[in-house]
Image 1: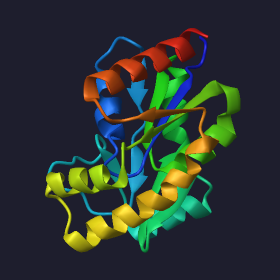
Image 2: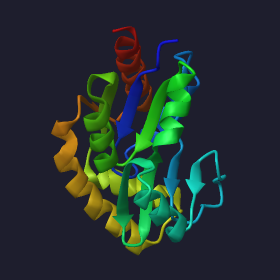
Image 3: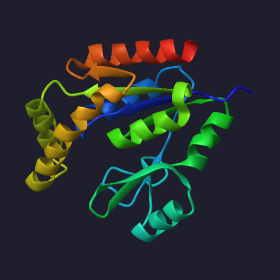
Image 4: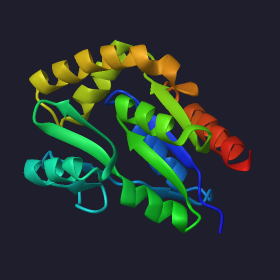
Length: 189
C-alpha cells in the first residue's frame, strides 16, 4: 500500500486555518487529521484525542527527551505544542493523506522533514486589524492574550515566503475553493 502524502496548513492564530482544515476533512480527499499534542489546558469545546492530545508539561518534556515528536515548540512560555511521529505514521500507513493544522514554525519543520511528500500552505489574514477583529470575535481570550497573539502574528507573517504557497483568507467561500484546488492538485501530482 502506498503511503499517504502530507498537507500542512499553518497560519497565525485567527487567520482561518482551522476553518479551512475542517472544511477539507468533509471533502472526499482521503484526508485524516493529524492531532497535535499540547501542554495547555483544553478550552471548553475541546476533547482529548479529538482536538489535541492534552499532556502535562512533564509528559510533554518526557516525549521530547525520548525523540517522539516530529516537531515541537514552546509556543508561549510554559505552553508546548507538537506533532507526535507515531500519529503521522499511523495515518500514512493506512494509505490516508495527513492534514495538519499547525503553527508556523511547526509547519516549516514538518516540510523540512518530509520535503516533496508534503505541501506547506501558509494562510495569511487580509490584515493585522482583521486578524485582531477575528480573535476578539471568538470571545475565548482576554485582551492581554489577544495582544500577545497579534504581536506573534506579525512575527509569523515574516515566515510566509518559506511555504510552498500562500492563501489569503479574506472571502471564506473563495478561500475554501482555493484550498480544495491546492489539495486536489497536490494529491494527484
